[in-house]
Length: 390
Length: 232
Ligand SMILES: Nc1ncnc2c1ncn2[C@@H]1O[C@H](COP(=O)(O)OP(=O)(O)OP(=O)(O)O)[C@@H](O)[C@H]1O
Ligand SMILES: [Mg+2]
Image 1 (tube, each protein chain N blue to C red):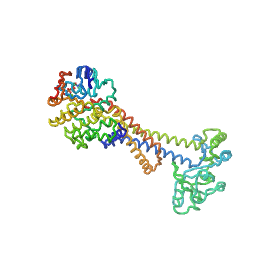
Image 2: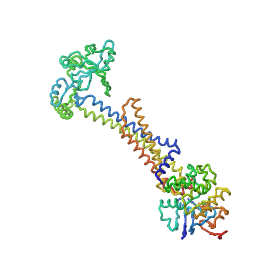
Image 3: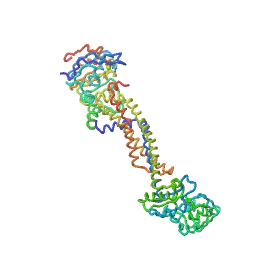
Image 4: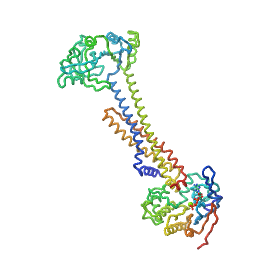
């Protein structure tokens, strides 16, 4: 038999009963598109978290107080010690509190961060208007503040916020700058924020020398590990208690985040792959029916000289064609589906060519694997039995 | 040596767990020479179809030897048997056995598809075979658009298309009226004149009268082998 005849035969098998073929392929379509959509959601989430973590600044080490310590050891006293470490460049304190900011009749709950003048350079914050706090502000504990983009818009609308007064608890601050919009960082909006000198924050609002987090920036990427262990050693020396503080670096965060999304993706695409197997069983079922229905046809073909492997190929190719058609349609549905997911749910998706190739290969394997037994059954049929079949 | 030689051929069907045995053929000896025109008669259940299926390499005897053109058929593998059916044998069945989805010419060219013949050439051959049975104008009709006699002629064209040496017909006129039956027999006789060995199974003595040699079977045995005199 000529190759073109094999193809013609397989195609005529698929197209002779189009509705049944579509129903049969549906399982594969759903399976393949589910694999592609889940993998694209997973990849999208991973890419997004990574870029969010990167956006927070680079080469950062975060120091905060331990979970179990009653009295925080992370205070202003620690700052100069960390600054003195040679592998550490910038050090940024963050004294944070959720509080209500009032302007005129407007009152808004916001995250107030008491920090130092180098915050924008370390945390990638850019100003839209005015300027950030200066070292002079920090030193004398001034009443100046900088607003996040959302907060400024909520409080002042179209008015120019610069030079205006806002009230925090009983303290009045003067707005000297407005930050550029940063977008969601996944956990909380960094645009609903207010920045004040940490010295003012400690004296007037929190009333203690405690600092929630100290961000230390290593001088370069290669000194991250050294900076980390030096800070650790220094804190151990200062506190003598490993549990009283926590340090983490960005690489750890990236790793954890991508581990989490990888696991999720694997789990979800595992579930999707199960539906592909179900689709394969559907193909096997229909191919068994088809072989039985065509028992007489097989008998006739054998009587006029069809060899076993020719009958085998006829049915295998038919199953493969069904499943491949399902796979190709599934890829299209998957691509369209992940586009829809990202638009309707505004989830980030990233279609990975690897997942498309995976879907294609899986559908081929499913067709060949589940088509094999019915095709073998047809090939081994005794021609006499086939010819007698009613 | 004859083209077809059966030696002590038996066929036993064992039903269930070997308790009941049907002995369809009981040690049949038979020789058919190239170019002969033979009919096989006998009561229903006497083993005629069983014999024809064995001769056509569709079925294997339980015991005994079948020599086809000096070759022991029992020693052939399934691919070689398929090759024999494709190249040497042509079959005509009582129930036509055409593929309903294919047109007349599609059915006729099927043996050539399995022989790997180029599509253009096999189409020409199929049309020529249809022409020989007088159905060239029905080439693109499907079996359900043809009369019984026409369907049987398509089946004969299919048996002829690969230039077989033997044509086996199991009650080829069994489903047809007298007029169509004679048309079919005329075609078969014509093929025989071209040198093809033709063996038919029939219940009808008038049909058997077409053939110079008539075998009669009863209970799996050949009880009579009559050759008509030359020129009768
Ligand atoms: N597959 C089978 N299994 C069991 N017994 C069978 C089988 N095929 C045929 N037989 C038996 O073998 C015997 C001969 O059958 P065969 O079909 O050769 O008869 P026949 O001469 O062609 O009859 P008819 O003229 O009715 O077609 C019968 O008794 C039949 O019951
Ligand atoms: Mg019979």
